[in-house]
Length: 201
Image 1: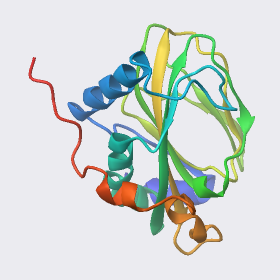
Image 2: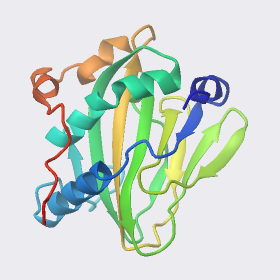
Image 3: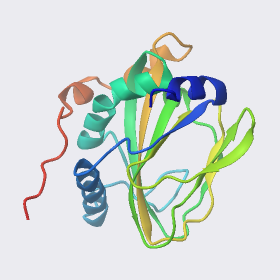
Image 4: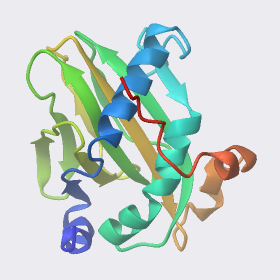
């Protein structure tokens, strides 16, 4: 990722291959799938109604904090964390073209894994036009969420787990949104500094 910051400055996005590696990648994917299967997530949100989603999950917040140094290096910016969010998309889901809110100034979408079908591209509008980015499990896209419209066409596979890690520039116009502004910092401070326990069976 040594050249990511210059790419990010120029293009407003950068692909971060293998940001999350095994065995932690499998653990986070299983965590997402199990939480959805057990009904421990919201039933959907305004962007993707009917699709399991979760704000501020304990382990995902741990990932938000764990990845902060790498995202600062890749973006070339000093950042405040705001919040984590994840969805377990289902077949046919579409993500409408949109911009993110201020607390998502610097955003990361990380593919935790998918079942069946091919890699599901995300489309992003850059200063040089719209492009599609295909992320394998563990890969991530770093982008300016408040400036680059982004979207996805219908998912052809069975499901895909995706986590979003959001930050703001400490020296930027949205710095007041650190910890998602009104959110208590207690949750982030108590988020585990290690990844989920690895299964032994």
